[in-house]
Image 1 (tube, rainbow, N blue to C red):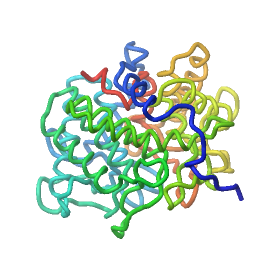
Image 2 (cartoon, rainbow, N blue to C red):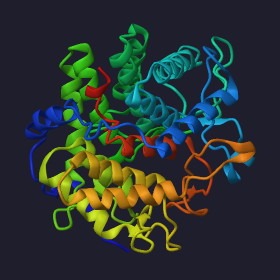
Image 3 (spheres, rainbow, N blue to C red):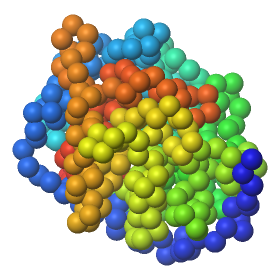
Image 4 (spheres, one colour):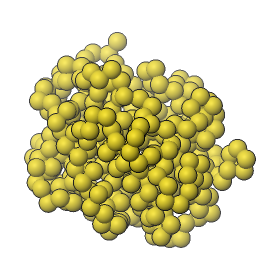
Length: 411
């Protein structure tokens, strides 16, 4: 077993106060590296997202796209919409930003607002998953009572990007309520600070801290600071950044998955996840986060040359299954970083993803499956060879060089 190390004794390359100013400039800066016309693959991917969204309603009907449209997840829960997937899909619509795209993004945002308003606890949260119909008032249709911090941050990012594009006060108010819930319920002063994992299905606090969640929260709170003009959100973002930087391994440059339940001890027993490395590069500035992206491209690619893709994490999937969503994460991070050495690998990874586009059931337009085969995603989680709105949304973001953690190109 790996040795557990105290996060409070692990050195970080910069103090949180130095990070906050630099991160603000990165997250709020323009991130689009290519404004060329969308390829046929991208156009088809958007058509898939349209089709998914219209499975549960049309026009201005409040609804959510089902997360999976094929495979085991669709067989088990054909109407399940995970808030994370809804958020990334909403952001993807704001990224291309056609009239129809923005209308769809606005409908998805309104659906999230309705679900927030109808939540039985009425405290600003959403739940992690819902039935794909999102009625106004009445039963909220949640499929779980759990609320994860990172999912709430992603929902907030989506609401703020719709607000940036459409200047809708309701989406800003809902985002503030989400941010307030995150801070009120999950802020933690143990170790390096930051935010814990949220609330479980039983309502009990999740006491570990996730690097991924805190990256999401930092980006969300920085965007809230800009949207509201309230500097308290910048201070809170600094706390999230502090725990993230404390979880970077100084020798390799990668970020560990998070802490143990004591909120302080670094969890080095679990795999090192791909998404944390790519997302850190999209949010945090400078060489330290760039090292994490380089570590991921050097250690987490599987498959043959010319057809390589990301695995979920170091040691997470011995079968070598390509996680196509993670492959899109890496391609997006490389395109946004936009160093000369990044272009060829980004194009190779995008090629791996587009080669997996396939017609879905009943002639569904070409979406992207989450993985090349069903496999292990670390712990007791599973990834699926199943058409997935979240993966498809990440693909169109990567193909357009658009950073989902920034709203500058939405305004």
